[in-house]
Length: 346
Image 1 (cartoon, rainbow, N blue to C red):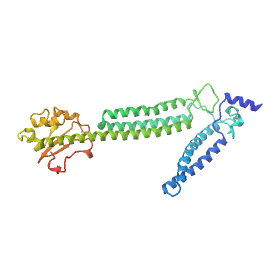
Image 2 (image 1 turned 180 degrees about the vertical axis):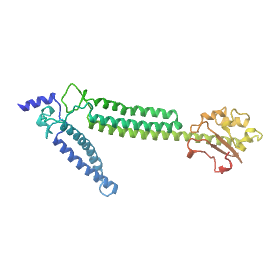
Image 3 (image 1 turned 90 degrees about the horizontal axis):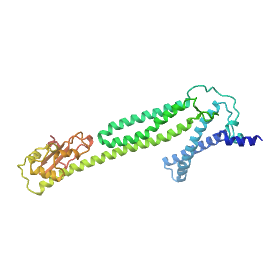
Image 4 (image 1 turned 90 degrees about the vertical axis):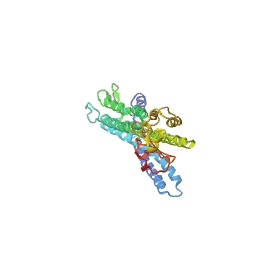
């Protein structure tokens, strides 16, 4: 008769998540899988011959089982801790009680009259801390990368902010769930209050999201670096194109050496300061590099510190060119040949 009662109560009651039998199974599985994983890891690092099966089994099967059993073991310990705190006897086999927590003897536990739940408070501080650290990282990111990528860095920052808002939203949620008058633990029998997210679930979800967040931030930094080097490559190529264009003009025919622009290039000058071409030589150079006014060079470069300062000097039909104000000092110039630059610096 009591069995029938237990069967009926398990349908409408509160299921028991973990019992002592499950915990023993999880503990043994965690220990065995840990040794299996370590065996595979040692064989792989030591490069032991003939241990391919051990490596694959250890890292694949052992690693997967260790992760699954370990997380469940952690969740089980947290659940058992709550059962003890509320005065429940820890069941050895939940089926003995119809898998219903209401059928488990309760001898009375510690007082839960406090207005704030400790587990929710801990989760609130953890998620709030991660939220703070992510935004510190975001501030550092935008300070460094905005000067290099401009609006592209802003777009990437907005994407990260949308993802990082998860931590702020969950921190607020855990703060609200700390209210014991409105929320209850999963082992409390009270249908008048909402059930709060268990501590172990908040921790495990946080670890998973933290891993995803780190991957996203690493990928964002890598993508930003790719964008930057693409821009640097573009600037280098455009500098080379200017150099090749001037060299081609010099090689194609006689250049009137009385042109003021030619004299300036022989002495060395900043063509980015020229403005509108004033003679045929400067006009021909502008046509080759695809501009009508040398002030348009500002729109052709992406990695200069402010308006690009493009220095050019002609030496025995060779052309030396340099951007003198790059954002990155290790990528500070393009040289069209191996001429000693020290004799050309302005």
